[in-house]
Image (cartoon, rainbow, N blue to C red):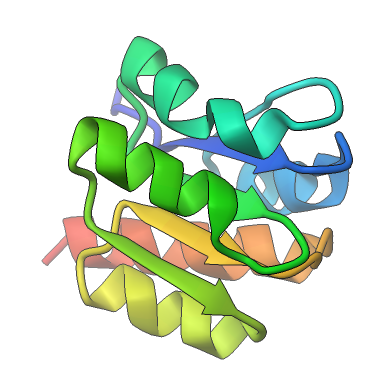
Length: 121
């Protein structure tokens, strides 16, 4: 059995289920951190789960992503506002990606598809 891409999702407002649906539709495993302030736990959960990458959502698009990057030295891109910017970050090797609020299925699907495509090269 091949290893599936594991993606951790942390949303400041405790959301993320739509992004998780997209990750799973692309063939990945999504773990949504429950509760308000989940973005601030992103790095810890990524580390515990040995995740391939993590997605953080908050108003600024940076708090959880920067916290994860500072604590665990994950390559980070933050303050993103579009799915295409996220795909570019995946291509650039970023492991933690911070967005403004964007709990949409397409985001999880496209980032996971891009990550899988890069792993197959």
